[in-house]
Image (cartoon, rainbow, N blue to C red):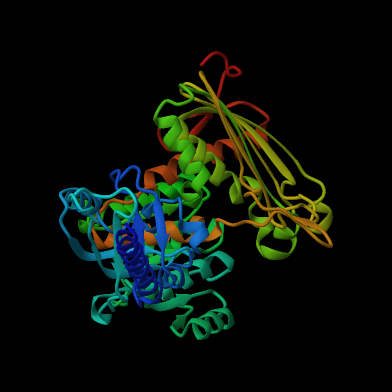
Length: 493
């Protein structure tokens, strides 16, 4: 009896030593390792990550455990790869291949990944440690295969594009443009690329395939026309333009190019808040019918007063209706899946005028869509003491069976010291993902969205807002290139 217990104790000790050795081996491995559950692609929570994974991807063990491997999903690797991976794993076979993963801070890493199921003594996939994935080092992207990129307009948001093209392994930043020679030289030097004040130089440069345009709201049309006529892929910051006429000119230039006829040429308007995770989730919930058919919405996006008085040097040539409303109007139009029929808008001037800036302090607009209504509000005089230090952002969507509420300027963290702050956490997602998506569309010859037609539709609405502000009447939104006065106020939808 005693010898049997001794043998059992020895076996137990041996098994424990083996587990310790295994744990040490995984902890000290140079490659990232994940162990995840085995319930299939929709339910496979992570059980373990090793230190190399934490270092490579930026997620701590506490952040990763309980999540699914989808936190690494970049959107670049085709869904078919993941489907095949799970089929192979559930068939108890090893699978390997090249995959593009995304780190916590939004960087893309191309890795050679292998995955295999862990089987118990009876050959079943165990529920304890079913899926380790070993991620090897990043595979260098050949310099010759990189897509040449340029950025026109290198203000605050233009630099977002510059940074992304510089660090994305699929692109090579060739040049930046600014009307200011000093600014173009400074940004070019900062990011170690060429710089110019000549649009034609970028248009004629065969090395450049992608061009981002991030000039002021009113200055999009000239560079967009030049780049499209040179058959460059164009990523255009919102709004597409500040008149329906100019939007149509851009679309005509795009559609007249031979490469656009077979969908090879790409044009995208960067309504980047579509990538903001809570709003992307809201769109999915509405599409799935979780709150029934949309009935009405309220959307507020405002800036602190230092934006028009200090950050934007051309604020007297625009206003909160052109600078901010494009974001929220696009979002509600996209989430509703409906076109606008009429607009009534009111605005107030005073505070900014007293500072020598002749534009609206605040604009509010009611828009009647095909089967729903929405109220939009944007202010440029939010006090500097506002908790977010930049924006106030709120979206409420009401359906026939429910409601979705989003507070975009409070993302779950509050900091109180000398003042009270709710810092923004998702900027890297909202700002970087649409640019990465556009690059992916160019590489994979996929038509991007939001399209030029989306940009035209939003400008058509804001042009009606502007007309209503001036004339004090309800403006009916035509389906073509103009807006017209409505005979009566909006009635039943």
